[in-house]
Length: 335
Ligand code: ISE
Image (cartoon, rainbow, N blue to C red; front, side, top):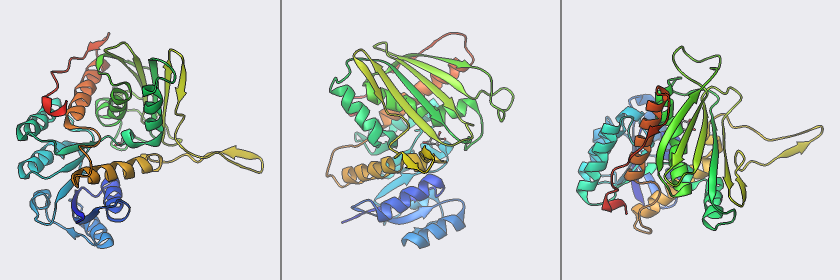
């Protein structure tokens, strides 16, 4: 029996997830969608043969919804995840877990209290072929021990505005998660350096910025976060290690040569760069919901660790030196 998924939020990513679950992913259908933009929700529902429901709560409680994708604005993630936990349905919750640490902790505590993992966090980079190859090479010891991981994260435009704290919590949170995962390590401290702002940056905000985490084992993780890069979307990662270098470049695009020119297309948005990662992430989620595998992808604990580290980076924006990061003990549920 296919898993009947309900999708909350039919913006960019919610729509992409709904279409992928309805058409690409095996073992799933989409039975319901909800968005406050009712016409948009209805037209997506018509396109994929789902019902548009009147509220997020109605969708969460609906008998024809076995599992839930939460792709609503960040500020609604925690309350909707708590509602999903209270009815015991599996969820794929878009990142970040929550914009504040208090809300993130509330979701973590509520899931721990149920005694079972119901939430997969939407850190899709863990399924991107480039990052997967980096992790495999690191784990196999191909270049020795990681010393520095250089990260570049450039957006053509800031989708939710240039607000430095929010951009750390919503965008740099991807690097925060992927480097924990790549290195199998947590962060001990973070420093932020800001410089000359780009032309669209409101007074008092910073873009680009350099955020440098140091892991517990001493690996340096510099992140360039640039939300108004104009030319397009670009994510790059290079690991400098004791015996060599691993370079992901900016993805898995082909280089095209034609008369007088050689080049690559640049995606405008993350959906172009991470399409395969999103598809693989949803397939892994559905496989785990069907019981074919154990829990997949990032957990609520990973979401909490990322939120706590992001909060330290936000504090580092206004502090002169490094800000320390201390995680509480990891609950046994996530061992
Ligand atoms: C956006 O919300 C995403 O999640 C994208 O993956 C990220 O690259 C972008 O910076 C965010 O704004």
